Length: 212
Image 1 (tube, one colour):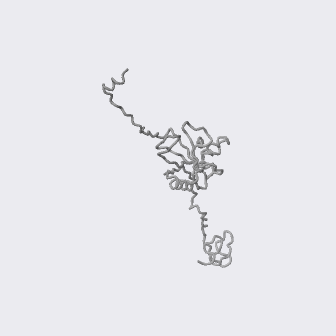
Image 2 (tube, rainbow, N blue to C red):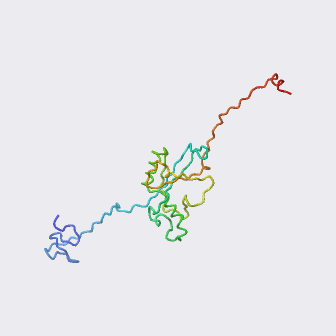
Image 3 (cartoon, one colour):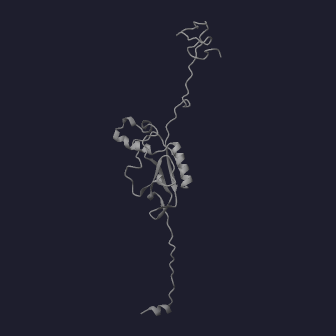
């Protein structure tokens, strides 16, 4: 490569700065060869990565709640205490610019409770190692509807309760997670009564002895 070759506005022969709209270099007389500017790689792989958020849940059996065992209980995990959105709200919520501040509150809180992929993977690893639970990670379809509601801060149906995972001694994730479940959506385990009822045959002779 000669001096200045491949650089826009610079002579490929001598490296002198070219005059605007010139076909030959005023310094050495070399013919000007048009050079297409090279696009700058900003680390986006040529296109911007679409926003992604995730939902995480576990299916639990042998779950004791208020003295009763339940199977097939679904626990939906969510982030609590997040102050800044993982992605801009206007990209995560449908019709966001047209919503009033009051109508933005519920879908905003819903988004704040969801997980990034890294957070979802960290949670799944913690549940497997510390709680011996499997976790399913599902990608949300964005943008979400303006009617979405967060788990916390609203009314809950009968049978609903929360599990404060982040308060367990083994918890070591850099974000706080709770779980929500509805006991009415699980299978109550029927525990057989181990007490045996013994029926003794009463003979006529015994009956005569106990009759008044």
